[in-house]
Each structure stands twice: as C-alpha cells, then as structure tokens.
Image 1 (cartoon, rainbow, N blue to C red):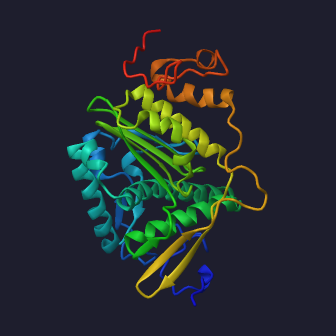
Image 2: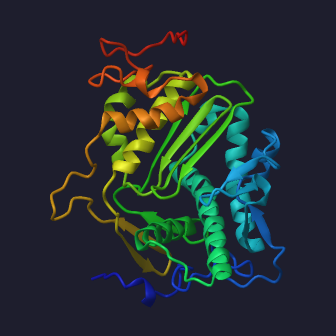
Image 3: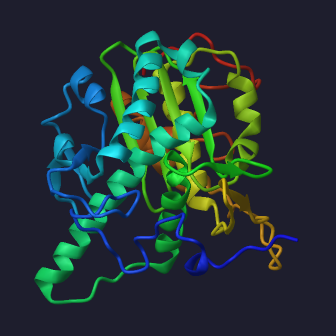
Length: 335
C-alpha cells in the first residue's frame, strides 16, 4: 500500500521556496542549495537565443511596467544545476539550428523543461521586484494564494531537471510545436504568468505552451488544430491560433491539484481530475467581443481593428478557415 505524504513531510526531495518566500541571490533557484557567491547565475533567456536575435540589450517589460533588458533577467544557480540546464538548452539549440523538423521530434519533457525554465525565470524576477518594492514601501508583500499554488507546482515540476520524475496518466501541460512561414530574423515572445501560458515564434516554427492544464487546451481547440494539421502557417494564422489559446487560458477556471509521491528512486506526479463537485464547465463562456480584443492585439502588425474583426459577431474574422470552413492556404492581407 502506498500513500502520499503532505509536501512539508516529504524527504526533502523537492525544494519549496514558497514556504518562506526565499528568492534571494544566495540560494540556487532550483535546488535550494546555498551558493558560494552571488556571481553564480544563469540567464533566463538562453545566451544562444539572445545572440542570434540580438536580444541582450532589448527591453523586457515587467508587470509593474518597469523595463529591464533581456540580459538582466537572471537566476541564481549552482554549477551542478547550471550544467544540467545547459544540456537541455544545447538539445534545443541544436534542434533550432536545423528548424521545425528537428524541433518537433524533441520529447515533450525536454520542451517542458526548456519552456518552464524561461517562464519560471520570468516569475522569479517578477517576485524579486515585488519583494524589493514591498521592502522599500514598508508594506507586506501581497501575493495571491492561487498564484503561489500555480508557481509552486511549476517549480516542483521543473525540478524534473535534477530529480527523476514521472508524470502519471497524462502530462500536466500542453506544448504545441507548429511550422510557420516566418522570416529568418523573426523573434516574437509572449507570456502571461497569471495563466501560465507561453508562446515563442522564431525562424520556421512557433511554440505554444499551457503549463498547468493537464492537456485540456489541446482538446478544447481540437477543431481548429485539426484544420491546421500538416499545414505550414502564415504568421497571421499562427497569431490567430495564439490569440485563441491565450484567451482560453484566461477562460480556464480550474486551479489544478497534483499529488507528489516520493519513492527512493523518483517522484511520481499525478494530476487530480479537473471535474469537480460544482459541475461547472472547465472553461468559462467564450465571448466574441473579448476574443476580438485579444485577436486585435495579436494582429497589431497587420492593423486589423476590433470593428473589422467582429463586424459579424456570429463569424469573427479568421485567416484560418473560409466561409465554408476550409483551411485558407492562400493568404491575402490586402485591406
């Protein structure tokens, strides 16, 4: 007979910085081990990526509207953990150098670890800013317990980098790799840390990741995903897919729970069922106007307005399917 110990009682296989909000630069962000020097750091965004797209000194906007540069986003990290992360980043870098065909062959865990490290790295830096601001203002750090719950689970799962971990029955995340006909210099990054969704578009591919949905976004969008299967997307089509996922992440109304069972050789992670006693749908109701506002933002490079997008509220503008529901393979962006 096996049983699951509460996290506080487990044999410390998993490190939880959220117990005492330990987000200093003297502790390894992933293992919790004390660092010998505050110089032991890694970049949130991979060095190779920053170099290819000349990102080092470009601005990155934080939630408080302050700006930092991409290279200023760092994580305190021990040499041992840094070496493991470097191995994952090398795998992804090698695949990126080849392109979509190689990237789509990477296993889901590698992609999750790569995406998760970037997303959690942004979260870590946001929390540090919040702690600094609270200290300067003399106020207590006010942090949503729902967000702590999500970030803690993301951090636990990211420890699959250093602790053998098995996701039972299903992956706790959805990660899509899609072929996109972008120009080679394209780099487009988005995240929404409140809903734990991430997208990146570069070279001839794009990735969309929803980090704690137990795979339901892929089911929710199965109709449109079936339409694009095997197709190389125009950038305007990918941004439409992206808008749909970012909006549905906002509509997702569950706070997923996971049990962590430790045995000597590994940690088993089991997602709890998303259906609960309230019998409420897993996603709140889709509203065309709100979706149109999201899509307007994602289509900003092409200048389509909300009025144009929802002119026919029953059939909002789409570059993915035509009036007959067929995939649009010849995109005409003339207005």
